[in-house]
Amino acid sequence: MNELRLEKVKELEQIETDTLVDSGVSIVLWNDDINTFDHVILCLIDICEHTPIQAEQCAWLVHLKGKCIVKTGSYDDLAPRCTKLLEQGLSAELSTN
Image (tube, rainbow, N blue to C red; front, side, top):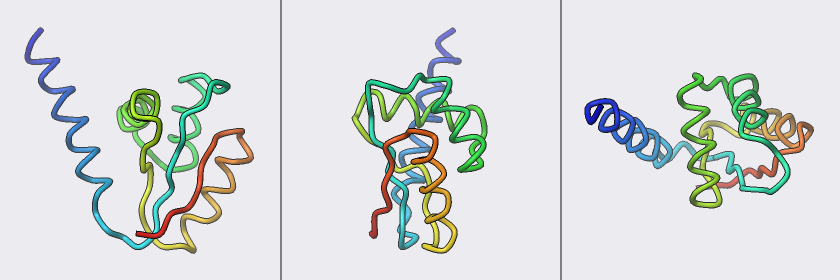
């Protein structure tokens, strides 16, 4: 049981480390009191091409910390993704690093 918990902590640390990589532009997802975990997870899988585990971890980080960088890359790639997240009712914004 402790091995599974340790693995989850390592996965969260890896996501936090991955989001710190400077790629120029990031999508920041903000916490809200409207959207369900399931909706956020499905949006991250569909729009940001997260794995189910990545999406769940990001949803938890947003819930616990208030925000999370969910995708980094070029403006041309991220602007339409951010728009789609907004269209799904999520609170997201583009941020330059």
